[in-house]
Amino acid sequence: MAKIAVLHHTPRPTWSSRQLLKAIADTGSTPLYILWNYISAELGTPSCPLKYRGRCLNVDAIIVRGLGRGLSIERYAVRRAILEAAESWGYVVVNPPEGLFRARDKFTSLRILQEAGIPVPRTLVTEDPTTALHAVEQLGDVVFKPIIGSLGLGSFRVKDTDTAYHIINLLLTLNQPLYIQKYLEKPGNRDLRVFVVGDHVVAAMYRIAPRNSWKTNIAQGAKPVPATVRDEVAKAVIRAVKVLGLVYAGVDVIEYDENRYAVIEVNASPLWRGLQSATGVNPARYIVEKVLELVKK
Image (cartoon, rainbow, N blue to C red; front, top):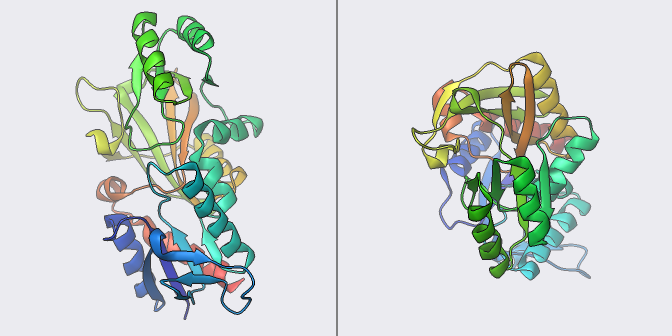
């Protein structure tokens, strides 16, 4: 059977990583948990180019569960280079490096979706404070987000230019770009998280924001409840995962103005504890089945 590694940056496997390791073992394959700090790639040694703790990394596939937070540009570049090298040397890497890094950049991923005809919110990226302030004046109700980030951390909803002025100055002082998105009013104060593996929606949930909050992230206290995805949205999220070059993803959708919808984000390393608790579906099994399918090709 196959040997499959789960790659992450935390010394102890997270809940989602443990689900993957168990799902790998349940197929009769061999699971291995590996850390970014100990993986290396080497040129000029064709018999053993990819190493872990100085020894050959003899696995068939690598499931990347995270790249790490607060990385320097140099470490980010090295981790990307290692994943791209592993893929070129014949390892199955999930999610594939190109798709993983596309999705990690919120603006790039939404641009690709827009070019594929998938609805996205009005979104601006800039380093110019005047342009940013003008966008807030035009759009009226916006969200400032980190261009690379997750779990709702570091996001601010702003409705007035005075507050926006201070946030813009703060972000630029911290050498951060300005990523500004039109806030779409959520009916029932909820959004939709759809979990896609390959060409299939395996589960979906509504995430209902806590009282007096606009954030619908489970990590920010949102309540997960099972959801049914209408055909139009299901086709759009499956297409979103495909055009980004991903094997699986959590796609965040806002349904508004009755039948309108927009994809606001595609997460290539999604957590699913809330989804599983709400729906009873464990995406780990579907991810591992897809990985094994790719290994056999």
